[in-house]
Length: 509
Image (cartoon, rainbow, N blue to C red; front, side, top):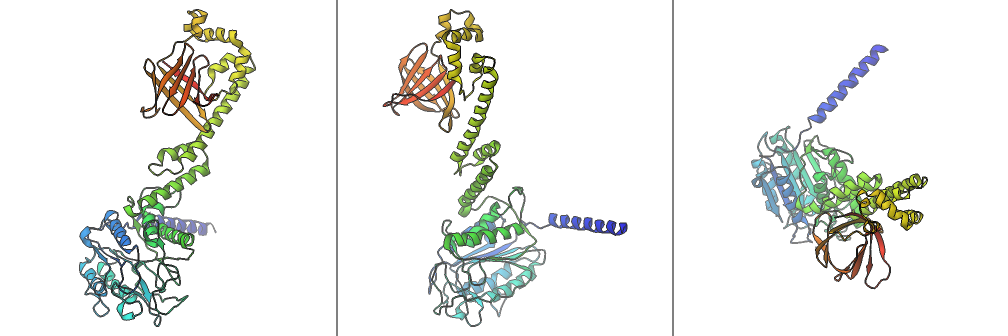
């Protein structure tokens, strides 16, 4: 029994070692100096409706191939509104499968191959075989289409030419039910509700990504002006397919992209059009290199990342998580105000708790002056402490706490001169506010942004004494009042009589 346990443990260990080695050796689709791509975007049709975003799809995929996967520009054959003749020229015919430009361009042992199509797909209702519809094709005439089965059969020969160490990927953003991207619109003269096209056979070496399967149509992503399948492929390949908590660096596993595509396409189709769309993505032992998203989906990726970062920060609820969200959210930061409000609630709550503990500790021994000295942004017991101290005690304590004041007469200690700069801090409702005020002339003051140093307001002196300064901002029609004895400041609108939002004066010079 002991020997069996040892053997099982050894086999398990070897299995784990093999899995780790296999994972580490997953090829990354990055060696593409000699790789070849054919990208078709069929938007305009002579005999049926347009595919509004097919040109956008093709341009975005080309940008991904050249910008992220490293395909050379001259090796990406981009064709818009391809005719049947052009499809045959690119992929070959059933009679002459190796007479295509793709076959001639692919280099044995050195080329990966990427084939992309966005446009209409149509079925033959008799044979149930799916076809790609060329720009000059008639959706009701089978002979005018390019059979998907022919495409796969000819690509299998290309696959054999490039070898097993290279990849051949086919991505099709089209459906083959006879519907268009518009709800209730059909390509066919004969309605065929619930029609299910046959699945053409393809060699095991071809990795297929098809926008939809069965009876479901392919939908559009109206916000990005792309096919929904293409949009989510580019967003996932830009990093959104990584599982939550996974490292942000390193290649993207194909299995993660596969999962993301299925989940995100299905969810978006239901949400935006009320229709089902179930994409089909083959398994593959490859990984994709990471880079910045292509321009067509850059904003959508930034919005999705911002949403995910905010949801994580909010779920955690910790101060450090909220601070991290605010600091890192960048140009897209839709939840900054909410994060700041939650953060300030936490800051204020912590300050209030410290203030309460401080008061309980010092007031028990009658150390009211010590409490006033140690006050921070929250000083809830200020008025009570000042009442207990009284005017005379406040003056005596000021001298006791300030060694420089001991050498001055009592009245001088109570009458500080107007400083050149004032810094205030405190809460205005939910917002934590810091003000920096600077005298720039006999009767002129400026307020500056605490972070940038830029001037945000200019004030005229309304009233000034040794213990009080009142300033007026004529452009915004409000007043600021600084009490240098109480070390507080407040504001009010011109038409008000009550001062609002007391802040502490925390520094003067």
